Length: 366
Ligand SMILES: [Zn+2]
Image (cartoon, rainbow, N blue to C red; front, side, top):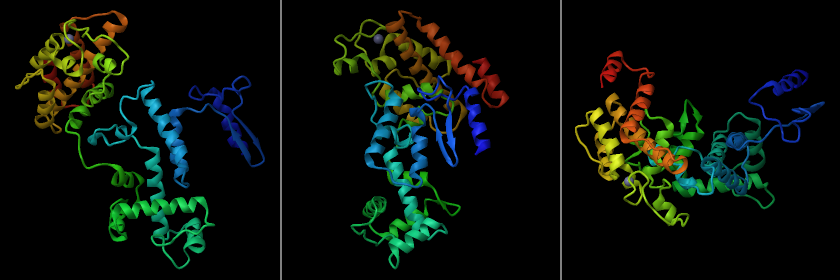
């Protein structure tokens, strides 16, 4: 404890550490007496998922708490009143159209299922032995019924068990599904989560959106466009946050996703220059045709295909950025300048990538 106390005292020199708002003046990081330890620090929403992951590995948390955590995580992601995409969709896997984040509510169920599985397997753990001696006796975890004086935690665990049995129909199907979630004899919570909550339906545009070479911020904007959730003037008018709708790039047409990417003559000029540069054999400035073509013809790990996916994401991001510069900073660049900026952003990423030398030579010649 003495050593731990000395280590904790060093936290005040760590730039990453944030004091509790009421303790910063006196630089208090902790109080310790005998075997009691109180830690003080600033709570941060970004760590909340990690904290709940720790607690649910042993306990079932009340649904209200989990819903609040999901709400906090969603607010942290969007950082504004309008949550552009529902948390349920955000929590789908990337290939299913989400961001691959975990829902606290559903992660809690996955953790409870892991506890059920450990009980079923009669793992050599003290609490498992206690559950068998106290609650199960001559029954098993899949058949036991709760009694009125059982603890809240045990009743919740059996509720998850019932949900699981209802989902899989019977214990045989359930057993084989749980078996498939084991890696090297250990059950994996992510595998349970995916088996329970991830749909088998893929989003056709997912591979295009999350290309290996894409900048994450480019992929994120492209993801919003594919969900038709970018806050264009058309959407702002629909939400009654704006009265007029006029594209700031061409000043002649209303602004929506299809117009911005790439029917607007400004963005069409940028996209045509990019298609020339990358020697596209098939061309269009129509968003639906373009995404269809990308989703069916530009699949796989091939470097040039990855580069074309990267170019699309970079073009969408840069045009959106140009639109925002014009609205919020009264700055404007011509199509040729924007094309050059996109080209440099692609070069700076690719030339630092671990790619074969002949590919780099080819890139420089482009
Ligand atoms: Zn326009």
